[in-house]
Length: 237
Image (cartoon, rainbow, N blue to C red; front, side, top):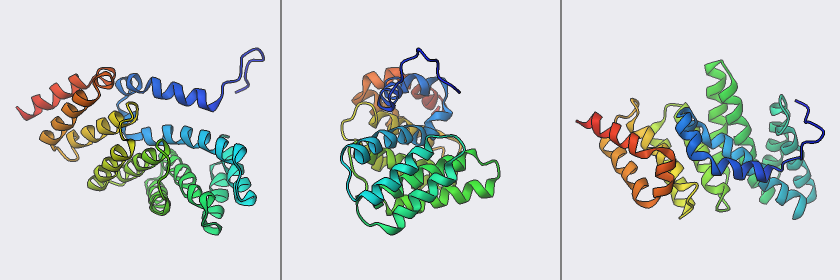
């Protein structure tokens, strides 16, 4: 869609900050986002990270340029396959920082492809390939590292591997530290999974909801945690 001529161009960093600010409201309006939030937020984070890493502090020019090309392709609709090809080439051929982050870029694209594919077998393959890349990725940075674990959890959820998803979410929370934006979101996602019909671990879900209220009261209010806590308690009876 073409932009209006007089409309100021927004940066990806501004868009990302807006996403963080409104995450509680978005979760409240659309619970499905809880299980898919790794893709959207991580994609935005990677674009920001990529701009700073490859434009401002370039290292190993060939690998950086190829990763940057993939990032630009990933920002355009219909170019996921081409972007993935660039990222996987860097991941295969370089063991430096560019090779490391290329695994994460590739995983992000594969996750997106999986969510958009209507053929179950194809989607499953995308999630499995995304996890293979995430296993090779060495988490780094207080923003992208926890988001990478959240993305891993989303892949596991889509593959029906719920215990593995819980473990990945625990890692995401740990890597988040005291981040008031990320940690409560990952905890909320964990509580929702525990409470779901897939696991029905109501007692554990209640404890996580209570943890969010205790440690992150503002985020708890924004996400309406009290409502979900009351629902979980009602299920327990």
